[in-house]
Length: 431
Ligand code: AMP
Ligand code: GLY
Image (cartoon, rainbow, N blue to C red; front, side):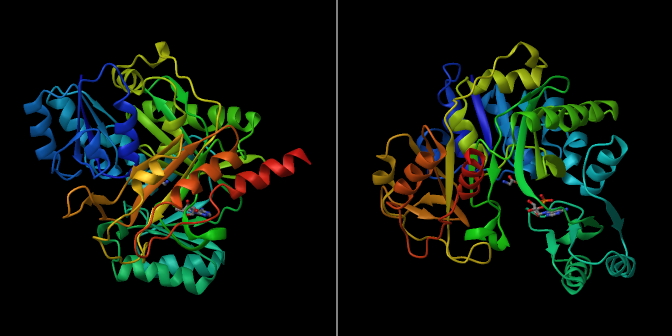
């Protein structure tokens, strides 16, 4: 098979890495890819949201299966365009991807089908939104309705902060058209976890659990990022909770989407808040998570390609998926200044030394080939996802940091506490 992976982050490097292990695959292309992906796939310089050019490329090269990483092309209808052209593609249709593309659609759907989530109200007027905030008080959560690359969410501790968020989103238009409408949500307390499933629209096959680390600094301080690290499994999700999430959330939402005439095929990712053993949904994403995909795919024992194919063709019921019992941990290394403005082009040292640590893979995100032959430079906010697998979470954490410490560039920053929450939970359980 010839496979095209769309995207160029750590998630896509992990997808390409796993797909490259399949004996069904003869050639992998990635658009646009990065310096790490270029070692496993032929990178083609087409942007992930240039649907016309991607379609033309896939038709010309006779691609057997296209796998979409990021949300933007999904929300813009890449899957519908490929299907119309007779090409096989993994991911939800435009109508189904609205579950991520419109927070309002998602919240109304959950309300209609009794899927546990927080209260919310939607607004298209600044005055009404502000009045609502004064009525409800803080903490409260203000979100731009549309896609804002994970940045259109403000968890406001005070009424003033919430009011400022309304002005930033609706008056200053910091997130463009994503801010035409606002969602104001109840603040949910608890511990977050990520729950991803494969689905062909009928059958729902869960992946193992995982947990992201959104804030930039240790102890969850500082602004939110795309994700600074992840581990799998997430001990906060006990076996009982796992069943509850499947029965009360994942199976009902996939059924709801079919009932609404928006049959959902692909990976569906629920961002959950867990409190006192009860899960509530913060959001759904229409794709694999980044960085969760890096530890998840390191634990996937089965060939990924038949699973992706079964989601597309509706044969997931006949597909076995097996996972490595051992935990995996990913530490994201980022550019100085991220998630704010940052410089690119800094030479990365120590990649070969890090790769020598057993059971570690250094997934590239924002990297590019440097001017000097053989060098790799930074070219994004999140630069690398150092990912390790080992017998226990503490061992996987140590292995991961051992490799990360071997890598450097001027201003490199990474959290030193990835996995700490899992350790806390594990030690409290044994007491
Ligand atoms: P979202 O993109 O909607 O998942 O929001 C990004 C992050 O904001 C989440 O991962 C949470 O950390 C936080 N967040 C979003 N909604 C809420 C909420 N209703 N209550 C508490 N935290 C939230
Ligand atoms: N890890 C967060 C996301 O993929 O949206």
